[in-house]
Length: 353
Image (cartoon, rainbow, N blue to C red):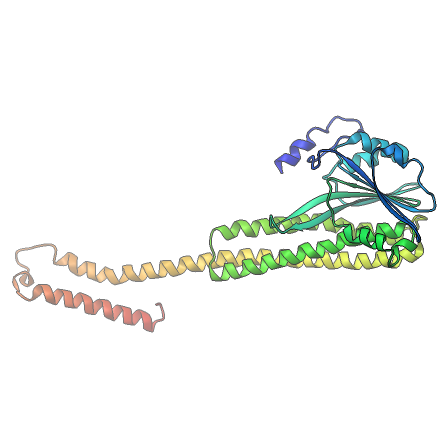
């Protein structure tokens, strides 16, 4: 959190539209890739410079992907080539931006969060994704190489399904859809962690569990902040009359909307379960403490009369007749043992033990 605040602190005072990268530099050198396709052809290439995108086939769909948002020069060149508003470029560089969409005269701008699960680290990875839909172009902006879009690339390459037969708006739908699908994958992992924590809390509530509960709680809170605006985003795409989105793509967007609602409901359910898990942990710790205190109290109660007897015969007065009695010592021991046994039996009958 402090690191993010420090990076944001560089921006106050700058004029609107000034392109400044806000976030971590996740790749050394920015890269450009291009996938071009139509129903009969497919090509995939690495692009050396933005100028190489000047003469693209108008009869094909082009997916341009920029890896590395820290390279504001390439970002500015892309903005100049495709006539993107400076405020759009500013939002693309701000990796802490909330998901949203904006409609311009000749293009559509969408921001979402790409959330994936890192099995090795056992944590979620978050990356900001920005999309520009313009005629037969999709321009995507990523923080680093590596994403969840490989199945979409494979479908384009294979030429199966609708992708190669439809316009760029369907490609945008496919990219948003796979982002939402991975929300389910992350939530599935969160559900597994929740079940594991439930078992730990019930079987052996240890101090370390509290940090795991708070970590899961924070992850779910972040997912809620990342997913909740997507509901309005997708809903707006289905309602607005936009010439860039074909009528036959609207039902697919509605399907994404249903999935987003399901994701949000699952997140809310898990958040309630985590809150309940914290209550169960505190109750388990309290019950454990009560059990310890009960045992200690019973032990102290048993020793109160024994201590009294030992105290009386420890006064050593001359006129105490039992002090001169040869059987006084063993009799006192027998009395104390019998008294202790009677008290234990009484506690058990009362179910205090």
